[in-house]
Image (cartoon, rainbow, N blue to C red; front, side, top):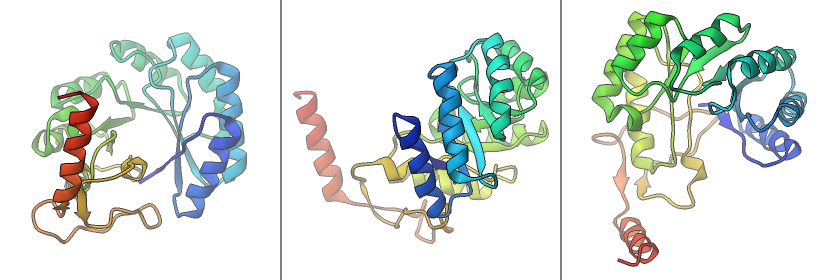
Length: 241
């Protein structure tokens, strides 16, 4: 799993990147799309902080139009990012392909892909170098596996996508990932951002950016009933039910 850096200022992001590298992550994932000069400063400071050997991935979250993407990719190339995720509006695969064809950096499709049909369109158009996709988008383990199989036929890998999710999804996505033959080697992990979780086991803390094969029954987790009750009560109070 890659290290997803957190912070609002370039120096904060660079500091968090160093911490994640010290924890064993060899790939750092960084949000950009906040303005040209700020983006350049963020990437510059992060790259200087982690050194030349750490892999760096950037995600503008659809912030750029085609011309902006081509311009920014040319500027950011100096910092040797290995991938840029969904640089443009997800509604236009042709724009994504135009950027991909002009880019010296690999381009990933994310928000424009939800299922196997979408994956097929991306591979047919050769609009991306990588597919970012998760359980929530596809609707479960079966559809995710189907989409991954279509991507494999098209010659692309799947990078697991994460959301603000409980350990149940973390376990399910991890188990699915273990069975995807064309799984990317740096996937998204969000469990560490939770204030609390509703699973009592297994321990989902990463070691050197990895989770082991889960040995428990089913998807490998045990639900914490008390934590579920606390979450239900917090939800009830928040929505005045």
